[in-house]
Image 1 (cartoon, rainbow, N blue to C red):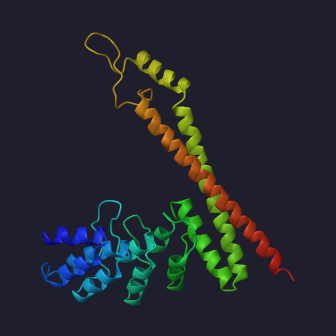
Image 2: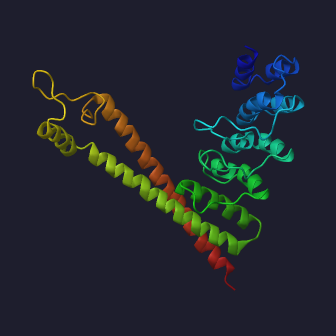
Amino acid sequence: MEGQLLRQCIVRGDSDGAVKLINSGALDSANNGAVYGDFLFLAAQKNDTNTMLALFTKGADIGHKQPSIGPEASRTAVHAAAQYRSAQALRILLDRGGDATKRDGRLLTPFDLSVMSIETPGLVTDMLIEVGAKPQDDNFSKVVEGGTHWAMASYQERHGAVAAAIASYQKAAQSYEHASRQMLGSEKFLKFMNSPFMRSTLVLGTLATGAAVSSSGGVVIYNDSPFAPMDPNRVKSVEAVIASEHGKGERYAAYSRLCADRTKELGGLSKP
């Protein structure tokens, strides 16, 4: 009961209510580190520093990991603050010894997560770089590769490391170009699979193989099968995916061009 109430306070931004509930001791137990560590994760997402400080007074474990299943598997409060670009929360966590290099269940670091939703460099990416965060060249996501290299390049350029910045901008441009090609390729594939030609081909294929036959001998096309894209709702869903993929592909292409142009500009400036 009290745990659900505390969660609601944090989610809706009621910092005063959350702090009051924490200080009441209603949730105290022999396992305060883990119990309050769960709420620390949520408070870091919301950049709720007052609640975070109250949780620390109760012994919240700064390295507490989320359960090992689901999209947030094995993430800590540092991951949460980085992903949501909660700069004040991240500063508190780093000052208290939070680990900015720890990987989650998908092997993503806080630095990786910091460029997944908000892609441009900023204060949070700078903070992570300053405590040792580095791009992963073997990352499964070219978007993450591009974003972390771009953040590193921006940081290096602003701190006078021109040669290093050029190399980082080059890597960012290459990664974003790859990501753009993947997205636009997916768009073309989805358009092809949803085309009238492919619809008729799939249905005819079922007729030829007799894959699904009703008791009366007629062919049955199940609603959950790939043969139902004629359904207006499914068409709209696919069109939305296509539009989303196209938008991402175009955006990543623009990032690639920006980083490539900056590489050339810095290269010209670095020549005697």
